[in-house]
Structures are given as structure tokens and as C-alpha cells.
Image (cartoon, rainbow, N blue to C red; front, side):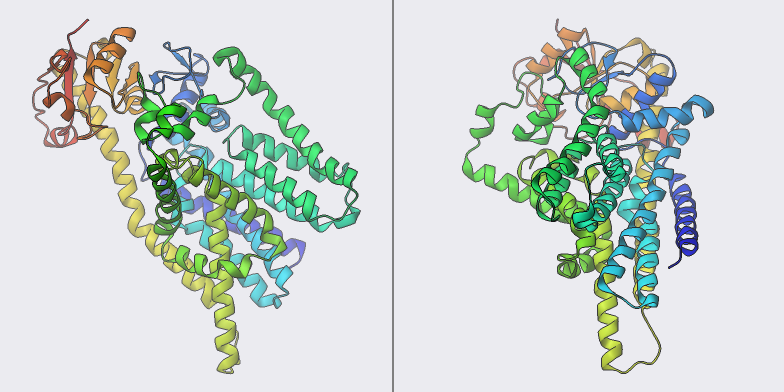
Length: 541
């Protein structure tokens, strides 16, 4: 492929991806899940001149516990910074925030196309099959549901995927240079920048650096001093980029590292992230016993494999998993496999409970691309073998991308609208709740702070200071409310760590929560939106 053809292919893939993502983004009207709402709300606060703060206290393990809350005690800020840029010009709506993931997500098919082109070149495929494999990979990624869905959400998922895949491409080219490479190679500077930016996006950026350390130390024939330089240069640049944020965290939270993210490894239930009186500890973690500790890891592996990778991308993901052995020995995929494999194993084994709440989900972009490439490799090989056996005279390599693109497009078209429907139902819930509380004479704005099961959503939708409801006893929640002066509890789910059912069981301080009758909305759609919502007045001091 000539340089001109490559540029044309990349531009066409990008534009197709932008169109597809723009259409799908129109279905999503409210930031779901809650971490997406967190990034968007922080962007709004920044643009409005309030600083990098949040109106929701969803975690209590890192001081200061105040309103407004300094943002990003656990997560990282780059998605918010990028979303704030268009907001400065076009306003602070969710639609404006979606511009960044749409654009960044549209880069993923281009990067996947480039990686697949390297794979085709390494395997020595004929020109037609090579072009078909590369472009087919890009087009498939353009409509592949797991990549498409997160390209409509202003969170860390697509940004991390783009930075990780870009770093993997650079690693492949650096390792291909072999003995000729020197630590002054400008590509090392680019690798360091990508790792540093990824570190401002997700903590899993450390595995990108580890993957390069493995490749540089074992896959490049060069003197030891040169290999050390190859690792040290991008590492130093990445640390230089991350350092200002580490200093900020040190000044604001008293720790330059996301300590609470590490504490998540000690979770025994997903609700531990909301813990107030019973936070994760080593003794509490070990007390569950060896059998449960092993079971957690089985659950983590199963969740990451099936719920994150295979089910959302089926049936293409299943084909990719079966064909993955064809990609194991390819140098052009070594970096992607290392980054994806390390991330998969660490999140599954070291964070087995937290990962069921999204740890691997938001770092899985490189693995999704790997499965797409493996699927097309497998189908290409299968069609070539069938053609050889049946003595076909015309090339049929195009059948592979025809199958993958049509299959991915079909599943995305069928399944994505339901995700958009979920976003509309969440928006409707809080709009209806706000109207009904106002009609009942107790506007939400006059009640804050409010204890609730979805604090980030409530704060994003209404601007009210919100406190996460811990999955603990009524006595613990009374203590939480007393600490922050909260007098209202709103529960929108039927089972949030036992709430609100725990109140029906009675016990200490259960009587401290008096049900509030907010009436029935006259609008049937409003009534349906808040049918499971319960409001309580906290009457104990």
C-alpha cells in the first residue's frame, strides 16, 4: 500500500467511524453509568469557574470529606480536561461533552487498521488479502458494539484505548529496529508521552510501561546499557508528565498516589466502595477464608472474560477467542497481547471484586481490538484453506470482513438502542423526582445534602450535594447523616446492599427513617419513572 493509499484509507475509516458514532451518541441523552456522570460534572464545574470539584461524595476513605469535594480521589482527570475544552466554546451540555469520545473513539478503528496492516505484512499475505484484512479490521471496529458503546460516553475507556494502542504501535516499531535502536530515538519520546497521558487517564497505564519493559529487555538485541536506556527514557518522560498531578494529589489528599484504588483490592463486596463505618481492611479481607478468596478470583476471571469481552461482542468475540492462538507468536501483536493480558490478569486476580464493577471494563479496549484482529485472521485462514481445497479461481478474502462487519453492525443495531433507553429512563427518573418533590413543597435544592444510592447521578441531574448510601446498618447511615447534616434519604433501586428492605426488618435506628409521601405524579410517564423511588426523612440527631 502506497503512502497516499494509506492516508486515504485512514481518513475514510475515521470519517465512517465519526458518522456511526455520531448517530449512536444521539441515542444517549444522560451520562450513564455513574462514573461517566462524574467526568461530565467535573468538566462543568471546571468550566463554570468552580474548580476541579464534585457535588457528590461517593467514597469516604480519602479526606477531606467536604462540599464541594475535590475531584478525582480515585479516578484520573484527563477525560474531564478534554471534555472541558469544547464546553468552553459550545456550552456545558452532555451533548457537547460527547464530542470528545466520538472523536477519540473514531481513532480506534484507524489504529486497529494500522496494527492489522502490520500483521498482514508480517505474515506475508498477498496484497489483496493484506488490504482486506487491514481495512476489514478497521471497518469492523467502527461498528463493533463494545467499542461503539463507549465511544458515546465521556469517560476514560476510549481515551485509554487510543493511548494504549498508539503506544503498542510505537513499541512494535521500536522493537523492529533491533540493534540499530538508540536511547536517543525520538520515538522513545513519543512512547513516554503516550504512557504519561495514559497515566492521567487510568491507573492501568502502568501495565503499558511494564509491557514495554518486557519487550525492551527480552525482545531487542542490544547492549544492556542500551536496553536500560530504552526503558528509562520513556519512563522518565511519563513520570514528568504525571508529576504535576501527583503533586496536586499530595497537596489535596495527602497522597501522591491513588491509595484508595489500591484499597479496592481488599473489597469483599462491590458495595465496599461506599463504606462508611466498615471500610475494606486486610483483616476483614482475610476473614472471609481461603475458599471465598479463591471463589472471588474465579468470579473475577469469569466476569472479565464473559461479561466484558465475549457477550457484548458476540458472536465475533467468540471467533476471535478461538482464533487467538494464530496471533500469539506475531511480533506485531506482541505489545497488544502483553498490555491486554497483563491488564486482564491483574484486574481479575488482584481486584476480583472491584473488577465486577468496571475496573477491567474501562481498560479492555486493546483486548477488544485484539479479538477483532484474531477473528479476521482466523476467517482469512479458513477461507484460504477452503479455497485451496476446492480449487477456487477467484479470491474470496472479502467474505471475512463482510461477515464480521455485517455481524457486528447487526448486533450493535439491535442492542445499542436498549442502552440509549436506559439513559433516557435515568434522566426521566431524576426529572420526575425533582418535579414531584417541588409539587410536594420540598424542592430538592432545599434538602441537601441528601443520602442516596446513586449520588453522582443525583448531583449531576439536580446540582444537589449528595452522599453515597453505604450498604451498612441504619445506625451507620444515621451516623453518616449526622456527620454531614443530612436529613433526607432517597433510594431509587429496590435492592442497594439490602436497602431499603433493611428498614422493614426493624432493629436499631430503623425508626429514624420516616417515609415521606411525595404523592403520585399526574403524568403517567413521571409515575412510571419514579415507581421504585422511596424518600425518607432522617429524624434522629
